[in-house]
Image (tube, one colour):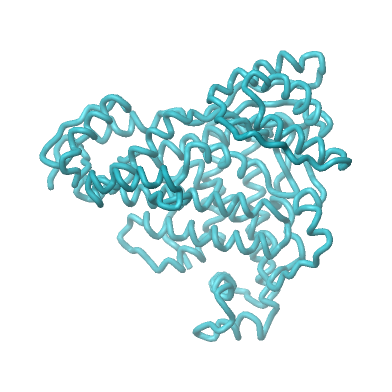
Length: 485
């Protein structure tokens, strides 16, 4: 079907075409026209309506050095929580006793999560802020999610896609069944909820044992506390007390624990706040891009909602990997989620290849860890940081990219792989060994008979930086060039 005047269209809507047109007009202020079972919209208007929405916002930074200001600060923070507290069943909180800061942390965070709305300011002033001051926190910034607007966009995408594939009656039954029993919900937890987006920010402000901020959550708000520098926590706080009594098994690791974001320096108080501001803005832009149907149009102008849903789910699953990677510094844990994350990034790159020379997905996987990717990533991050006049951050992350990739290739080079192509082939074999040791094309022999086959310790740092590249500019990142290996 041909379109005119740069129109794009939703198809296969049946009797629901006019209903979608009404939703676009009333919810998104987007005019449209109905033709048969299709709804047409102007591409440029779609980009304006969906590409400039505010799903996440950051409030002003507040100093917490003066205990005399705690109540005033707490009232300010509490005023941002405008989502009604859900009705919770009567339940006693189980708080471990006599564990010092651990006890205080659990008590403070759980109390804030379940208290009545009228008590939020009191819990903040009497428990949370004094606790964070004990951790040497100096400032707090509220990051707020616009849950209603984001849920409108996510629900519209999902419901219209179900209309297209199953018809209106069946789609309605599926949605209602999912409300009654979450196990019957289409896409389940692979589909993001509006509450998940604050977790995307959380995943980008820590890399154990380092933390740039410590977020404390209350419904649609996360209060990000920061100190004068990055926090550096002992492994028992990163991995859990029980793990101190267990010996980890790390069969493919360069060392037992993979620590920190390699090469990241100059993260002082001002730059930590700038980075938080940058991450919030970037995650909001990512959400706008994901929810904009004009980014998922085929050559005929048809909006491919299934592709849009797959991309949203891929990013959600990807953040699941990144968040889980932060739950332990044990190297096998880091390697497992880093490899899973690389698979998802490679799959996205493969799907979004525009140049008509799509390669095997394995080539995109390998290219993500190439020195060419490091150069592209540095240019991308530096350009975005400089655009906001965050020059120091641009330099800091440029150095982090350099060190992470250089140490990665140095480790593989020391195992006898002088050519980059051979090192990246080795990486693919390291990924494949996770399926089992009986591999095709003598991969097991090549991997282990002549060297240790160890996966470099910066694999987690590289995947963190790649996700940051995706977040700051998904379109540029996903079309960063051909895989060169």
